[in-house]
Length: 287
Length: 257
Image (tube, rainbow over all chains, first blue to last red; front, top):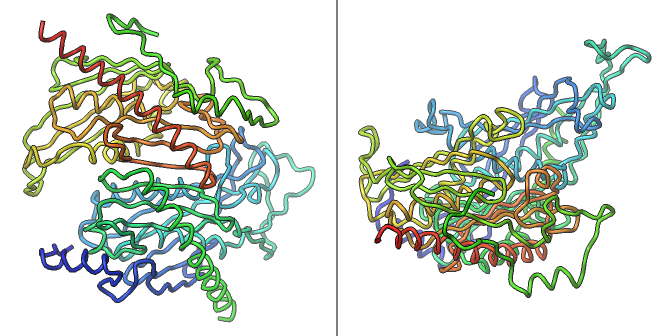
């Protein structure tokens, strides 16, 4: 990434203070969001999201597996993000490991909920086939193709779209079959069910530059941030996860203020995303 | 708990205001949770800190909070690797690892690979990086026994170790976590409580400056609950900060004699 001159830094900070950012947006405006679903035919669900120059792809793959003995009626969900070297030469080889781990952990925190499963994006019991014996393992993978800031929000949106796009095959287990060894599960039927994604939260990242917060920061604006708070909020305006990133200390009252601003912004983002995803799904079905 | 040496018993309880609040309006879920170590919901475990645990390091500290035992050593400031670019501020390198016997099931500690970057984020806001340009400070944390609420103990112990090493900081970083079990908020959870939790909130703050360096929330919360949990944690952080300071003062007095 090219460094910024002192003049450019001053321009960015001054613009944000006056509610006019470098690309003409206001502080709480998102860049145009484009959603495309079904981009990976081999995956059970996939989506590509573009926010300005940031482009991410999320895919959901389902595999048959035994459920966790502690949670026999639920499938397992695992989430992992990787950064492709196409996003920039600093992501080649080991370089992306730190960023990938950070993004993966933040997304896991926001989307997978607490240890008992409360606050999870969707109910994993819809992935169960036979209680205690057979379930679907959902592997959610995110890929950063092009990075221009606000990766977390874009990945959250892509995963939401990918989950909506996921078709879970209906597995017919022959009655009376022994399930101790690999069972003969009949997956030949073309029927699929969908996952209920009405509870999937959106992630809103508020970046604090100077004394003001902006939403959807570009990578130039992110380089000027003092700290950032990423909040995951669902339809009922309940907070499903929060991560504070960035080094500077923040007053607790400012954090609470950022949470309420994020809550306010999340409503518009949720509506925009829902309509984009619905449009993308409709497009995909037409083709 | 291991011997405290000459230090006064380091038990502490939250301010009367928060404790009364909990007692006046008890909120029970269908199973009335009694904490395994009979603490109140808003009572933290007694904390013990001792500096100078590792002689070879620039600074080190050992912390024992309940069953969680952590040792942290700080090396530096020392020369950055030649491969790294020139930097006019210092660099902080953190690493958190678990011993294989730390967890009840052998080797489970390797699930917590993200603790290193979380420790880094919690500390970088408190260290005055301009005071050691071109060099790196290494913080190595080892969890000897995982008894619940591991990362907060690691963060608190690391800031005591940094102080012991003489690294300039704006303030000590104290860290506390709160678990949400049904409708109850339980501070400083043990391993058993963490496995049943519906949500958790971990806060790292600089008590004297009243600033939060790190905040992570998992699970489903309402804004009001977050507010309640944050006030509870910040209060506990300031008390923990006082204990950390008294430990450092004792160590300084002892070395003067």
